[in-house]
Image 1 (cartoon, rainbow, N blue to C red):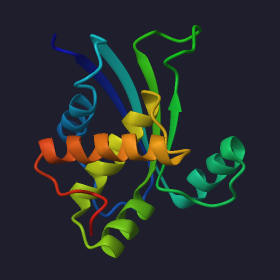
Image 2 (image 1 turned 180 degrees about the vertical axis):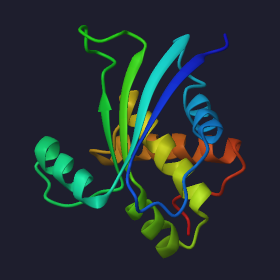
Image 3 (image 1 turned 135 degrees about the vertical axis):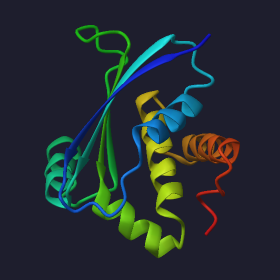
Length: 154
């Protein structure tokens, strides 16, 4: 079944060195959904600066630091459109810093962060060793299917 993906992208950062094209996000999202049988998916990706993601991270996770991505899943929310799986908030500054530190391409790291976020929206997490192994396996498998290197070996 061909999944229709409705993707809204909000740019709320002026500090962007690299920004994937919408078609790239769609490829990464579609690849992350291959094992899910929903037909239509809606996702919001918001690109933000460190100050905004730090504020959101504190408000929703009580962590007073900036992070690369936050995922807000709405899959089980009965008040929201059943096809709207959630929001990804991505800090372009941190993604760029991490890519440099890991010596990987910006495109590859953006792909990994997007896939990682989509898996969170689908209910995967890395809160314990077993869950982390499952999630990292899926991320690595999806990345390989897109001809990217293992994101955990750098």
